[in-house]
Amino acid sequence: MTAIHAKPVTAPVPHTTTTRPVDYVWAIARIALGWIFLWAFLDKAFGLGFATPAAKAWINGGSPTTGFLKGTGENALGGFFTGLAGQTWVDWLFMTGLLGIGLALILGIGLRIAAATGGLLLMLMWAAELPLANNPFMDDHLVYTIVLIGLALAGAGDTLGLGRWWGNLGIVHRNPYLK
Image (cartoon, rainbow, N blue to C red):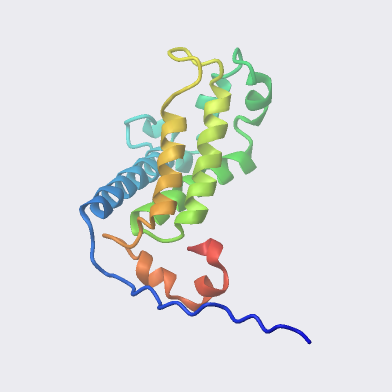
């Protein structure tokens, strides 16, 4: 005789739409970090004169990766990163990443992918600068990576963003990594 094991019945947890103050803090952090990525894309693409002069803009034939990566030659992993500088595929991947991550964060959609790709991009930039000049290991690249992870875990796209709508799309239900 086999025993029948029934799963315990629990009441569903009601979905709350109450927004807490901490949700607004995460939302503002999400939008601010999104703007950092998006601004980097805009300045490098169009040479708005902040970090990138117009003559070195991507649309004018400049390479958005050359300046940073060529400057890593003396660093621990400089040989590897210097070899990537100015390659067309690296420039396209970098710029597509900046744009996609920036838009995802500002809009509050695809935060899991934005956290993963943004974290990877930031970790590569951190590694390119090793050894760090002002700290044995910690810098803004690592802090931003931690914040990206927090944004994804907190569901920060739901407040002041399109995250709730995005999460209800069928494709996102079928592919939760898109949330």
